[in-house]
Image 1 (cartoon, helix red, strand yellow):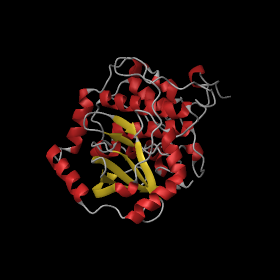
Image 2: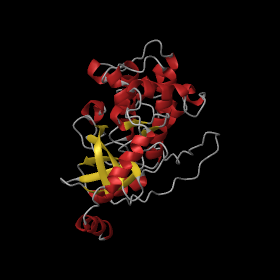
Image 3: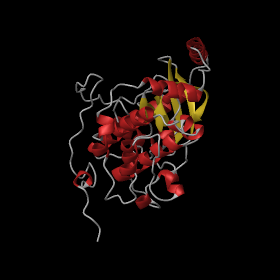
Length: 327
């Protein structure tokens, strides 16, 4: 006979429990006002793609320049319907979620998604491809806390991410951590799909938490995915028992025993930490990526070249505006 579910994980999901939206706090602990609804109004034909920039959540990521604002952005072409992706982007406005600037038709079909640019790559780049975080628990817990804030924000609004994986946890060289691809309803890597969702199209809050647990284990250990190794992930020394418990509770194979994002945010190893970013996170990102290839002057020159390039055709801009305002 299976033992009763512990009280702290008895809620099947944040949405089902009707938990009110969590108050986001600034570095001093003061509640932040609700985030504004993003305009998601960037004309994607105004964005000049300048070079590849690693792997995104759903495919190749490229660096772009928005000509009208002279701003660096990230560009990713995905399968999906433009209007549906635009609605999802408007609903996912949170400091721990990568901001979507615009969604429009991609040149070869599907949708082009333009997002804010983070210069530190992804968790996949600095941890999974670099043999792990070298036992740096401070970095691991900071990444976990920021990602859990993003998931709790979504789940409290009855939304799911659906594609959590190391590649969707984006980083900056100054230590910011954000989830990319939130709410688009697109599939992430199969290795990070919860066992109960295998072969199914639906996405759940429990599935998001399980995928995050696997991503954290992969980052901590340098292994690709605990699911491929069999059993539930177990972090060994030098990681503490509290950090190991956090990953384990997120990765329970039984969704009825899996903790929610809100519960995990109350874990002592997260609530007792000092915020904001630990200096070691910025150091870890910079060590893994190596010295910055581009200086600020290089980036300014990149922007100027993109702005000086031939502007988008009138037909391209008209197609974008018709597609936005004709719905």
